[in-house]
Length: 82
Image 1 (spheres, rainbow, N blue to C red):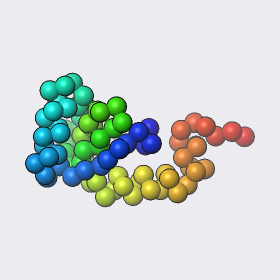
Image 2: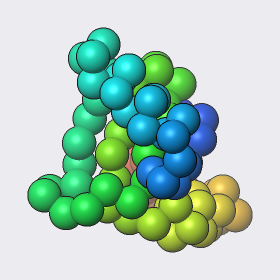
Image 3: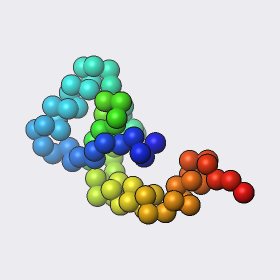
């Protein structure tokens, strides 16, 4: 699913708050914070907006790790063949 992420943004800006509100009104908002403070928004290719409690930098680092490690990426997506 990582390849479906278009952007990871910080929640502090006015445009980010507007995106969140528009997604909520359209029924495209997914909250995965488990009650914690929202720290980032993930914009998906399906126009869904995902609220995350993980810092944007941390998400970016994790995505970079997946892109740099094709073997790990295949294993996580279940495409591993032996």
